[in-house]
Image 1: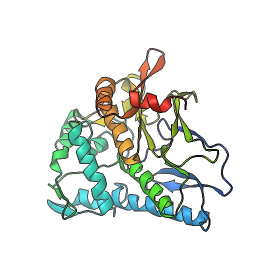
Image 2: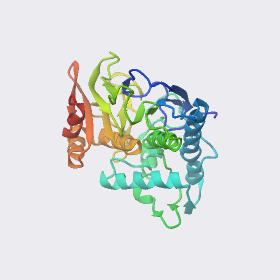
Image 3: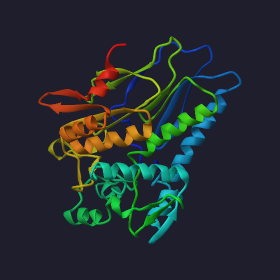
Image 4: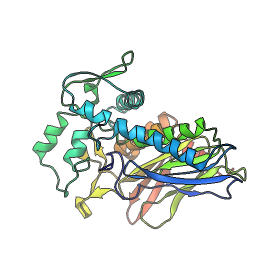
Length: 338
């Protein structure tokens, strides 16, 4: 494809967990490829009768389908057709409808801190598919973009698998589609009968089964200071992990440093002390979206939301000359030695 989809960061993924793989089984496979403007990788134990070529093809096909449905970088994608459509109901593919349904539910539950219609603001700040030399948008440009945003503009009809386009609504699923892609890649491996794997897209991961030595896959969440240190190491077993942060993708410098995550409620880039938020969840789609939502909510409200919903979340907070971490009880339980 000519351009990377909008839901992939350019360059390295933010706060990407580092993985210790340990010894691999007798029939190991380590695969990799490109998707969504970034890379994917998978480690697995291939069952008898399954080849690396089949596994690679299954993963790539699953990810290509997500791109075809949800990439605003693609002129002929389903999301582009929706964004360019006039007023009326638009029938959506099953995957697109499923992701949008979840995104709208999270928007309602977070009071609009998460919003899949934030695309006009993302574009206005120069983080969308038509990126440019960074210059903060004018107040008039921000206000014009805000008038096109608002998750309540979108209504769904489950019976027809359709979404209402009021006219001018612009969806951007950048904060959820990559995680959904990880889930799709995992399901593709499940369909091949693979029961031990760790699959990753741009730093978001999902694990099934254990390592050959009987221990769970382990990940270490990086401190976002380029030191190669880590905040916490934890096992990943039958669940996913996703991180949202701004230390590797932002615009400007110093006091004029702007995060790529936009607060839909204000129309401004997030400006709080959070360097990154990591969420562990059974589904990578949910982990991906929740990490963004908690980032926008900020430390106090984000922690309160995560605790209220029993989420396993880790907040890395900037402080004077150092970083500190704050974790929910569910995340602390995962990080305890076993």
